[in-house]
Length: 340
Ligand code: PHE
Image (cartoon, rainbow, N blue to C red; front, top):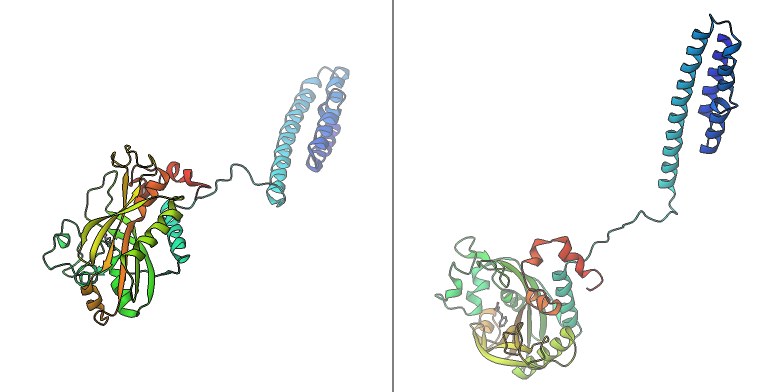
């Protein structure tokens, strides 16, 4: 009897190991432990044994039953693992959902969109350093030595004459030093101001500067350029107006307003009931700036403008807090999937 048990054990374990599919394994289980299985048959045969032999044989059979059970379980998980490994290697299977796609950040997207509009008008693009000399950020731009904007209040100074640029206007100067007119450029980039952050202020933000210099450029060219840009960026016919303003590096200087796209000029919360939204500073390049870059007296005229990219993005997409651009909360960023 013990020999029969030993043979069944060896055979049974081998068959379990060789079962290649779940179905084959189930067939082996039935053949061993099913109602008509071999082990079951031996258990039933216990009654035919001498009473003295029964306890030992019974115990051996029960042990074998447990051993088969454990071997069946082990083989079952091996088959399951094998199955998953094969599936992972099957390159034709679709990806496991959800496949989360990244999105472009709205600021660089809007920056590129604005540049594209100006490329369409024949503009080139250049960039300058964020760590800038005081000379380019202020002096060459005709800021008087005691101008309040040079004050530590607004500017992050890194040394006596070196700072984080507060505007993209210094790139005008760097470009004019290297090139002669005619020229038409946009200069996008990050700027810094020592300001407390709130819903409409951030100590870092993006600007885009425009510069066009040639013979006989006038304020009319500036108006046409601004109107074409606003129409392209915001869509449709959108009235703009110039208000007199002061910048040291332009004369005359203006601030440009666009009719509020929310209320169409009737007045609402977005435009502070005025019907107009300020979108940029601009003006005709000051003769002292031409002098600083070494252009001959009275040979050229030009216009320059500067706009806040963050502000334009906020107006276009109805975003009410500039800080959202810099916190990179995925719930905010994911809203731009497919929009930009
Ligand atoms: N640099 C100005 C600013 O930061 C904007 C500007 C650019 C104004 C060019 C006129 C011409 O406010």
